[in-house]
Image (cartoon, rainbow, N blue to C red; front, side, top):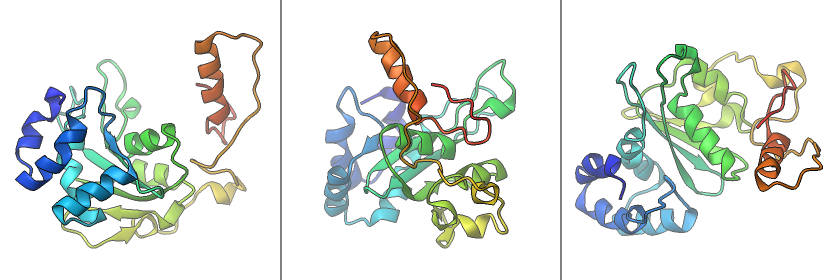
Length: 213
């Protein structure tokens, strides 16, 4: 298990530690659990989807990189596949604060890069800021996305972003996480070039059309 998880892991209930350890002890633990793992953990611990996501928040928050604010935020994105994806906020010395990555953005991007087609919920340990609410409004799950916060009743993104202005108001029909292939081509056969091309063909840039990888 990566050392970043040790303290938070040690504070989890013993039953949850026992259920998570076989997956987290692998050297290449990907900071996610697939559906079969999620179901096994839930059954072993007697947790439902929401309770498990809340329980995992301290582990997600340990992935934060916060040299500026020292304020760690964790998020868990649940895909329609049933997979759970970790996200955490990241800050960078010498870069403007608007260049930071928020935990919700990180979890969404993590899920997207792993091929998730839509999200059912985002669980986060602090209420999403306005920037993140607008970012999540770009998703194909839109206002129906469930937002889960500790000590709060379940609510949708539409509850947190009323009277929202979004991509549909600009006649944009291809939304974030929709399958897409922009059809860019390269004559080069280098694997790294091909990987970059594949990423650019999946990129989401409906406002600028500046697709990149």
